[in-house]
Length: 75
Image (cartoon, rainbow, N blue to C red; front, side, top):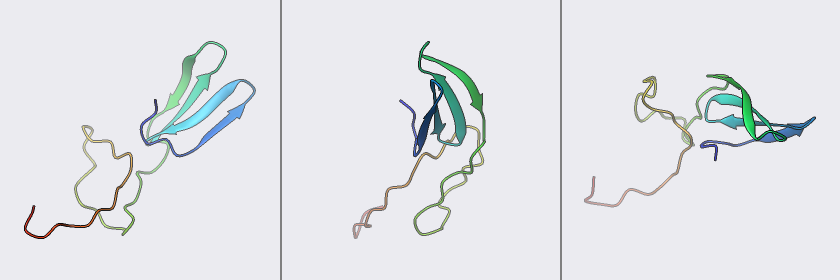
């Protein structure tokens, strides 16, 4: 499982995928990750272009957005 995966490609026995902001190369024959380039991709942008909280912390990895409607009277 690769949280935040939006794209994959297969070439010469390797599966290349985005894992949130990292680029990962996975060897299909051995079933192992052979390379990971950390912070290769930018963080996803919200559908409205707004930033709702600081994701510059190493403890938070933004993998996607889900737009919902605010319910009246609830936080």
